[in-house]
Length: 425
Image (cartoon, rainbow, N blue to C red; front, top):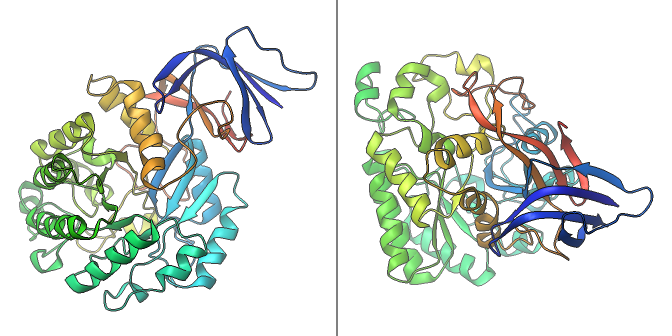
């Protein structure tokens, strides 16, 4: 039995906030009551959470753990350790591995390895075979085998008939389908915004239209099919407004996720930090950053997801057009949310936690993202005001512009299935 006492519990699902004690047994919260009113039996492990927020374990529906095929960048064990250190109890891996996760053997392999990590490691599967955009993967049998959702993340699906067929099947199976919205026909050099940043490097860059056009297409198909779609790592004000208008029109099946780097940084960072601020889609302009924040505020954007994308130092040391896109994010996500959104008055702490736990759980149909008697003992204990200076990462990788920043918010403990997965206390 685990006894968490004196913590300030925030449950975004019910709206409950207050000082509570929790008793945990067999992976569930068996009792929750006013602080000081519970007694644990002899031998119970005690965590004194005085001064800490006790919240649902965070959920990230967009991570790259690089296994199989690219384990020099990250593997499922190291990725899970980074997730636990960042307060995450559930993550959903992307499927752009080698081999890609478009078959039962590879899906079974990664799910089995995920069970050995101490947190809940789920996986999407590819929409199309080999991520080639030509033929659907066996989505029905992969769904039955435990796929959390469908995506060809990293590669946009260009054939409209394939998208429509995939969405119809996704709706039938009750699984979310996520889209990387960048039309390669419009892009000369990806990872850098077409504008001030691309001019600085003397390259063509990625224009905002590359995201807008495919987002508009896929939102319209989602309206027709009823599929739950996720516009991944949204980066432009126009795409945010397309999602907003769809939801206002009653299409609650249209969803979007925002990354911490897109609500914190602009293309100026690509000039300052070079390849460590190169990602797909790229960092845009200040108006886009503010639009993403507004989307998080008004509920247009229901999820914060890291797009945790580890690369080796050697790869990121290449010139701007040759280095791979992406940054790590699991160990900085919560602190960036507190520093950039809560402390700046854009979101309450409960709203931030909703976007990082309850919202993703709802869209991915997970029994997670809430704190209640009988509910899962997946929790994060947070010192909201403690300083965090990123560095000394649990991830294999360190490709991020946020190293050395002074942020607010430290994870003191991560508890998954009633067991301590990470503890700083």
